[in-house]
Image 1: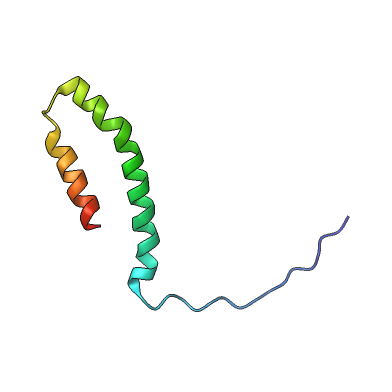
Image 2 (image 1 turned 30 degrees about the horizontal axis):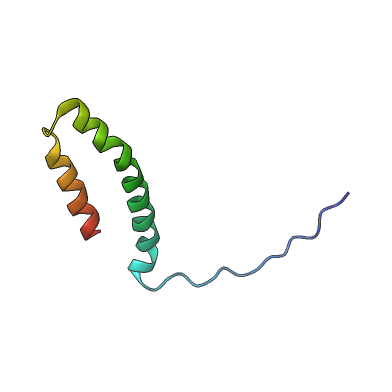
Length: 66
């Protein structure tokens, strides 16, 4: 059993805009953060009450502007 020969190609041109580089990372971070908040914030509220409400507000505002 032998492998097929390796095909070597040129690399594509890099993205010209900084937003095309950073954009997918911001979306991935937003998805990761928001999925954890569904579990984390109700647990914190049940344990500590509204003491950490500022953290939820800060998280929502940060995600809105990113």
